Image 1 (cartoon, rainbow, N blue to C red):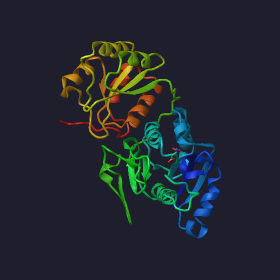
Image 2: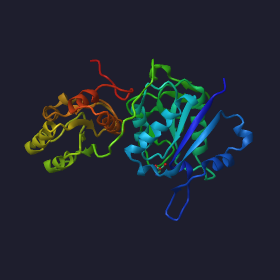
Image 3: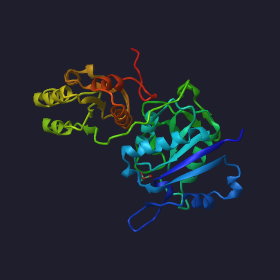
Image 4: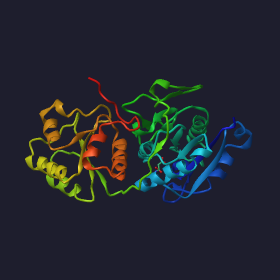
Length: 340
Ligand code: ASP
């Protein structure tokens, strides 16, 4: 059967050109693709439609409402295509890939988010191979989830993080195996892919960017910082703690600020500052004291996954108690359940 995919171009380095201020996003990606991937080569490519956003952006300008726009664009055209490629800037690509995984739950078709570190417009670039491989993955492989593809690595979207500011190896999946070996051949690691769902369960509620906040602990952080951050309209606050979930347990005022926020129905989430590993707050008294204020452990989620998941749960109009329960339960393969 003839396969067809939709490419959504949101902006990012992949479609940028030089300007006196540095790279800027521009439209006209189709022209650039035609120039760089001439018809004699493109003849081997699966057929695709390109949907260019009229207002392509540097992804450092992204807002939660933009995730919803992309998800709705995919949902509206879901039956018309076999797979989707989202072209996006690398700076917040892992946030968007994570958010899409919660918005497009129960996917049966691949959604591959990609971009590049050097624009397609440059002579030497990583854009062409990322684009062509993403198209191939979206059109020819049974991948029922949102993935991030970059420089030979296919990662679960909500497990990925940008760990390098420069260099082609920008993304990793610190707490989860890669979904495929992408070399001369492409081999999916079937045992780590999400199972094919019985039905799609897209949830596309309106996102409100005021509701979720994140703060990284630092030695000497005042209780006042927590009080200010946890003010309405904040409904969920992620505290990036030390190691396995520890914090300043000897600072009674700090603990009181957390407890007060908890009692005002702010969902408090404990996420480690470490890149790998999981929160286990009862390992140390310094973590247990924090947990007693109401802080919920977030297992081994990336900050991108935890942040976008909380946005999603808030947008679904769940109560603070329901949000606390769901934080630790996987919705789209974003965390590991420990069985010990
Ligand atoms: N600032 C760019 C962006 O995120 C970086 C990139 O795409 O590599 O849009």
